[in-house]
Length: 369
Image (cartoon, rainbow, N blue to C red; front, side, top):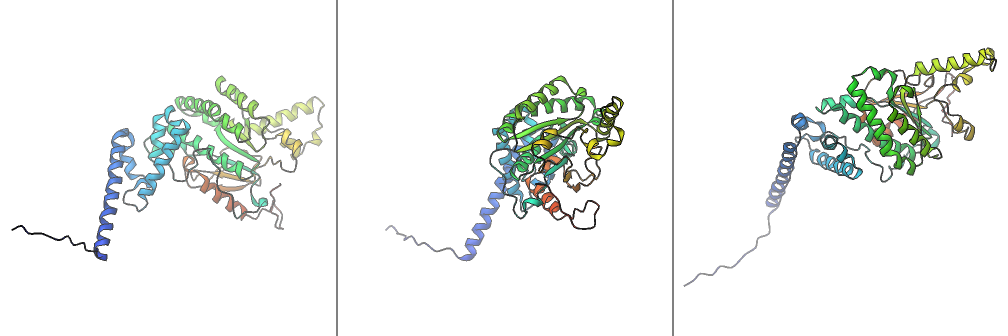
């Protein structure tokens, strides 16, 4: 005689459902850790150990999975942008230690700059892009990777400034004092400047960015000078954003060359010494743009409204010494490769709260438009 059994289905109790959810969550975390171990096993040993300690990839943190997803998205973005093929380590750097929210591509537009009236948005923004090498060193990566990540950060900031109606963005790319660094690093930086100008040029043209370069270009390589010339020529008719790149630049040296130019004009009788004032001296600095001053005098601002410096350092480092007399200063406690849209937004909101008096007692918030 064969026994028959009837199948009976029981609805799971609340306790059983909760236990199932815990098991599923544990399985997802285990899969995440396994994928990370596999990725690290394929990465160079130079930064395998450090990756576990990275703030964005701490598996004990509740945001570890979110950070991992962000890193993989940035990796795929860099692959599409072509960065992976140029330097594999830069691609690994985008996964192991890339900041969440850092702007790394041009496609799409940043969110609108809400909460600020148009007259509270800085007309001219200057940035000391500091901390590329330290960002890489802390992750046991070559310094060149940090500088390449810095180019990605700049790309995102340019995109934001163009979308948020900033008229001029001046960035400190390379100082004259930087030539005192290790010659290998200087050569790598010059090569990166040349490559970046070539690679980013189509996007700069498309976005309406006009490129200008200030500084002593006699000290840079011929390849860099040629790349600068091509970028300036190709973008000279653009008007959305004026991007001024300070390359082989020094603020003191700029004032000295302006003084020499004025002295020569006085000696030749072209100019009287008593006619020299602040405006005349300003017009002889490399930061002066006669075209913008003549074509759009109401919106032209030679002197930056806002200076941003990254890395937590609080000094000007011989940058725009004449022009920063009444500029509002914002120091970001992060390295330049970590700087993105979110921090730029915070800097703009902080600027909007400043009481700009220019030496006067009456409140006078001025951002020419």
